Image 1 (cartoon, rainbow over the protein chains, first blue to last red):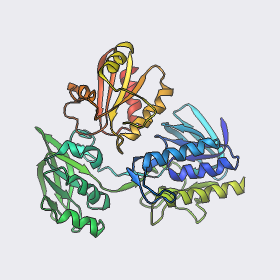
Image 2: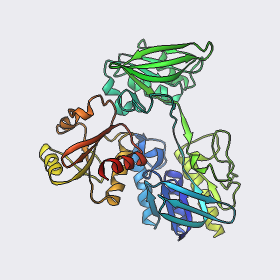
Image 3: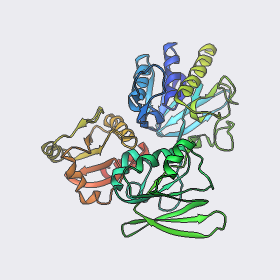
Image 4: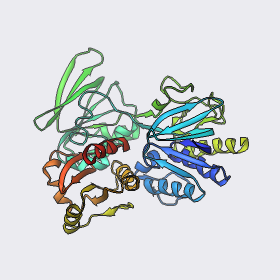
Length: 305
Length: 113
């Protein structure tokens, strides 16, 4: 079993900021991620509110720079790996990757962030990329002059709808509430567009294909009556979920939504286990805040080693 | 222009040679968009893990991408990126839209084992 001074689970901005600090303090640092480095930032087209850049920087470039900076100071990475076993307690901490390698440490910083929420209904996975999409930037032009559904009524749903409206013939928004949760300025741009209609108080229950059309079976949440509507494609933007399922056998305190509860110094209920970034229970989630969280946790670790 | 550390396929001849001269080829055809970048990154990581597989990428907006767009295996694909897996010169798998590392690994285990 290999030992590191600190193991960071999650290679987004929070984890990478922590790694830069611990590595610069000459602590042996291992960063683990089930995907590549960068977290959600690497999939953000342009970042315009990260201090220090006069012009917006591409998300993948910012993420790449953070990783290179951590590597430069000696951080080791294990990327695109599965956590096949994890043990965290006050006294002992270890992680097993891909059923092969085991690493132990005295300090763990959890920075696994959040991911776009899936609806987890029949047909969603089956038609991913062939009728079901999660990205207007990527897939809007496949739907030029087509009729589509947008599922969701929050900020991301409305922002993506603004882009989709440049391509599509019409959008039917399916939303579970009677009003949109998005910021008014963006929501207004969408709902005042004559190409848009809204199915209020409905939730999709299944997707399937009928010849070349996508069918949404949606339930009216007030009457429980189900209807079926056909369009050419479905775009889903229904928020984010914390990446905390890998903690299911760990005695760490989570909120009812799966976010990790920490104190102001980012420590969890387990001694030596910290949580930073979007996985942590807090009100606002921004790259700058993730970096701040990572820094606090790293400084705590540095002072305790 | 793709900004990745993968070798790019830029013309038909390159693609032909790659497929003819290698038993196992995987490539990702897309843009520098949010669904594509994670897949390029995973391919970059897997280049080291699976040295017997040739990982490449291809810009979706270049003329050579027409070959991929017209593959029967990609018919009905309405999401980027396309990932195509060749074994002994034949397409053995094609996927559309974002893939996690676990999904890519599962395809590799399935088609290249």
